[in-house]
Image (cartoon, rainbow, N blue to C red; front, side):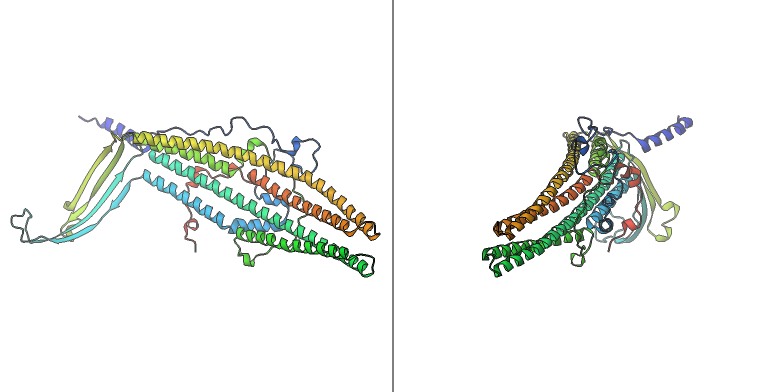
Length: 504
């Protein structure tokens, strides 16, 4: 005989079991990123070198960039272009749409936690054949009508955490997509800054060549005048003409690279290259002091490292999903409705029908399929661990590369500027010797070529120094840090109408 008290006590327990269930599979713990703890400071930091002239890092050394990192260069044109990029860059928009898609997959996975309700109203009118002989059909040759309004409820409780692991996997994937979005945004921002300083570098080279053209024109006038008065010789005139023509050709060629960089920036900011231009302005500044922070903070600053770590978490959830296949599935289903041969009696109480019952299914033999599937996802996770650690190592390499580049280029730039000073004196002395008839004009050409080469080297080094500083900021993660990564709860929020509207 059933005990009512026992029944009332067991029902809540059973309901709790069905709703919560167990979570099979390994728990996720972030594995160590590197075999050894990061050092206290970067090896290539200028602070590690004694008596180093040139570029310096910001103080305190453990500071970090935040937000709009490009504003550190204090250039209003660059600031305006970066703002346009953040709004109109099509690659960023594509990654944002991918992030929105990843969030919808969370809702799809969560829907599996709840029952499925379906309705299937139908109506059928039929006539049986009257010439069926000894057929068992009742009333042969008669017409009949059947109207049905059924409803079915089916629910598979998440007893072993398959659905919950799926939700977690999609949440981690959405976080991964958010990190990918920030990584793409940083890449586009750094590309824009690099192209911007390349244009400024081309403008600096153009200014140098323009000055050289004017100086060579005066030199040609001098040699021509000396030739006309019989003091000079024809070969000096030809040499001066050739020097001027070569510089003019170089000045013309600079337009190719500048135009291509300008077109690249137009693409980045979502503008038509035919309607876009950047004013001419030679670069004349050095990189500002950049806060590089501590090596131990790099793991929290780079979005690609965050994306790689979230990829591991998603792979770990997949192991749990595969492990759940070892356990039986329970399906609770119920159906009912109304059925009648006439519509006026469809909703009468005697027209009702119903059925209810659970179904338990368990695979008893699959020739090792489940075991192989679990092992597959274990190896996927192991591969993701290796990829994560490689991403971390690559991050440290890129920071050290950029630090050494900026530091060494800043020292080389100082030395090259000294070479320009010497070359200017060389031109002055050699011109005087030519004018007094001591040396041939070919020596003046040599001095002029040396000066031009040294001035071009200074302009090129200055651009390399600026672009290397951009690469350093990118390697450090820009102004991003892991606290900006949305939480699982945030990526699970319902999308707004604006986020789900078809773009026109």
